[in-house]
Each structure stands twice: as structure tokens, then as C-alpha cells.
Length: 290
Image 1 (tube, rainbow, N blue to C red):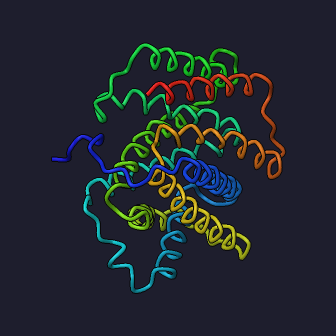
Image 2 (image 1 turned 180 degrees about the vertical axis):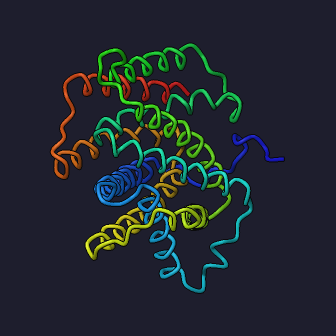
Image 3 (image 1 turned 135 degrees about the vertical axis):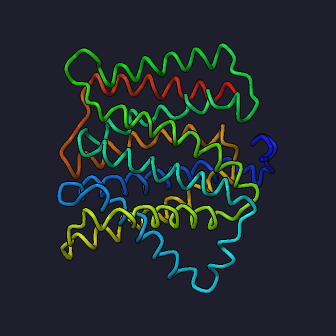
């Protein structure tokens, strides 16, 4: 049986490096999401997911070459598989949701992940959830309600997919911090690509649409961004404590607004911005209350 995650060995305490790596990782991963949203206009969602993981995996094979057997060695295969499945299902939920709702709104709802981290910290990290965290969670939930506006005729069912993705991403963050003390970041990235490629390859033949040359290029670019972003993200959590690094997940709101405006002409309205501000403020308060 695995020990509580709080017992993991911390590899680094370089706060500045961790923050910069997190900002860069979020930029690259939101860029990957933007390309995925572009692809869903012409290709099935399963095929978009397959291309993300396949080209990620292919890039690893090309870069690592004969080092793959070493990279694939892990002290915690069960946790590596768990994290890989959380990444797979998180991406499936996000890509599906982005087909229906704007990129900035998707990012705002996905920013709820710190609240799930706070709730999961009690059973997984054996950390008490005090009144400050609970208050932050309540305020953050209010921010989510402002963004989705239930009863106002703008709530799309895809919003619940994003919230499910935020929950899975919270599990991902906790497991990733633990694995950062034992396995190489490349090992963690390798298993993400391997599990995602195997699972999506079993499904993609049933929905396959042959891509154009431009489609292949966008798919390959998405895989490269996935590999680079995932690797840098793991490095960020290995470089500094999660409580310091995690708040900079919120930079996804900035990057999503930028990509949404440039690629799709979407800009969030005032209500979405206000809800996003509540989510960010409460999320930072929750993480700082540790």
C-alpha cells in the first residue's frame, strides 16, 4: 500500500524557478488547448485526443532513443498509471467542452482545481481543512456560479465537463508532487504519452477522418506543445512546493483570453471577468492558507 503523499521527498525549494517554469508550462499547454479547439472544427474529438498523445509519444521516442528503457523505469508504476489516466480524462473533458464554450470561459471554470486540491488534502495529505480554506472554497464556488450563470439561459452542460476536469487535475497535481520526489520528470511525461496513446489508438479507427497536410501539421505541433508543456510542468512542481507554484495555474486565464481573442475572436464579457476574479482571489487564499 502506498504511504500518504505527505511523506514524499521534496527535490527542490527554488521558488523563483518553479514560478517561471509554471508560467511557461501554462502558456504552452493553453496553446495546445487552442490548437485542439481549432482541430475540433474539422476532426472528431477522439482523433484530436489521439493526435495529442500520439505525437507527444512519437516526439519522446525520437528525442530519447535508446534511453527509453531507462526513462520507463519507475518506482511507482501504479501512481504513474493513475496520473496518466487523470491527464487522459482531463484532456477528453476539456477538448469536448471547448467545442461548445469559449476558451476563456473554459479556463475560468478549470481554475477551480485549487478548491478540489484543498478538499482532497484531508484524505490524501492528512492536512486539516480549516475555516479559512472552507471560506475560500465557498467564495470560489460563488465565482464559478457567476461564470456559468445558472438560470440566466447561458449555462451549457459542457461547463460540468470542465469542472470534472478541474477535479481530475487536482488529483493530478497531488500525485505529480509526490512522484517528483522519486521519478524523473521524463518518466512521468513518458507514461502520460504511453497510456494516452494506447487508449485513444483503440478508439480512433472507428471515427477516423484523414487529415489534410495542414491538419497533420497542427496535430504534430499540438503533440510537441504537449510534451514540452508537460515536462516543464513536472519540473515546476519538482523545483518548488506545490503551495507556492499552484497559484500560477491561474495564468491560464490570461493565456486563454489571449489565444481566444487572436484565434477565435472571443473576448470574455464583464460577468465572466468578475467571476474569474473571484475564482482567482479565493484560489490563492486557499493555497496560501496551508
